[in-house]
Amino acid sequence: MSETRIVTSSAPLRGEMTVPGDKSISHRSIMLGSLALGTTVVRGFLHGEDNHSTLRAFRAMGIEISEEKDGVICIAGKGLNGLQEPGDVLDCGNSGTTIRLMSGLLAGQKFFSVVTGDRYLRKRPMKRVVTPLTQMGARIWGRGGGDLAPLAFQGGELKPIDYTSPIASAQVKSAILLAGLSCDGETTVREPHLSRDHSERMLAYFGADIRPFAGGVSLLGRPRLEGREVVVPGDISSAAFFMVAALIVPGSELLIRNVGVNPTRSGIIDILRAMGGNIELLDERTVSGEPVADLLVRASSLHGIEIGGAVVPRAIDEFPVISVAAACASGQTIIRDARELRVKETDRIAAMVTEMSKLGAILEATPDGMIIAGGAQLHGAAVESFGDHRIAMSCAIAALQAGSAVTIYDTGCTATSFPNFWDLLESVRQ
Ligand code: SPQ
Image 1 (tube, rainbow, N blue to C red):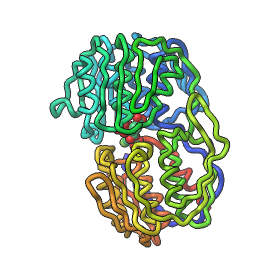
Image 2 (image 1 turned 90 degrees about the vertical axis):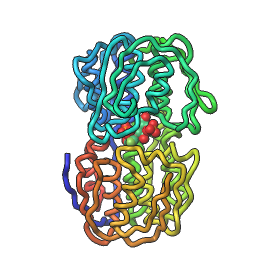
Image 3 (image 1 turned 90 degrees about the horizontal axis):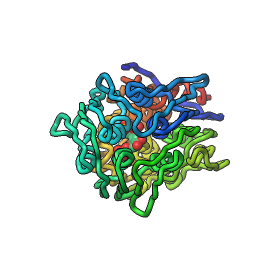
């Protein structure tokens, strides 16, 4: 995986591009397609390493999943009771979404299973899903008192709960909803702010009785899910790197086509616009139950802002690249309420502060965010990704504005979410 890249500063970025399919939606398409009856065809599936971990796990539980031409995925769904006991440990690789959502699903199966992941995933907290699932009656064991993978499940009957999550997390919410599929009755999840709602939208799209309300969502158990065609839009978290690149490199103008703009994910657009970014949404439409648009982004003079509250979960994966935009903006940016960044693939607050400082940015970590001075002239240096795809790509975007070459170590991790990132970056640099 380890790979070193050298990125030099950029002339304007211009032209049209598309980014690969949405990672969150691609995971859910495999999961719900497997639990539905009949065939699910997935177009625009993200062929990244994280989604392949999900795909392999469902194959290991007896689901036939084939790859057709153009990367289209066909899933022969077997219904809610169609999964089989896997013959081996399910390896979720680097993917938090795979391990946490599958935990919800495995808790309610009639078999034994074990899930694990790479050295980064085995450090990420699992109590957040283990606690509510245990309240539903799940039997789960794990390292660190049940907080760390590998996790073992002795599946069985679950009972529905009404759970108030202390954090806004789509993975916690989705794990409980997936466990709720196997229950008799209504499962409810409440959260402090709305996290991404792809699971809810896709469950409804496959025919589940699911009702969002202010502050939460309820699902009626044992639905009949029907196989569907799912068209996955481009991932706004991948588009975010090119949005920031086009905004900070003078003279740039990029049209990024076919991007998912679900309001629970589009916090990046609101934040960059609030910083003075010129971003237009064109041809807004709905595809497979998800809002989609083309994004026209023009270079802009950005200024610092304060970011906190409900927008944070709507942009949670974009804070590494938001910190790059903030470093290139005039004035101070303060990011609050983003403590969750500390338990991603790496501690993304610590990682961005140390690596952006090496490039000459002036920023400091706070317990739940960062304070970024803005206006610094970035220069070349050698930086680390810490094995985190979003750190590697954010450093590459910062390098476009640096006075000399930036060396980025350990960039192979970009394949987890954005396998053609480097080729696309080259293709839009003039
Ligand atoms: O899947 P993973 O490894 O957790 O991926 C990340 C990412 O940056 O790609 C986070 F590290 O995205 C999460 C996101 O942060 C994907 C996700 C989902 O698909 O449900 C939800 C968010 O996590 P959480 O913990 O807020 O629910």
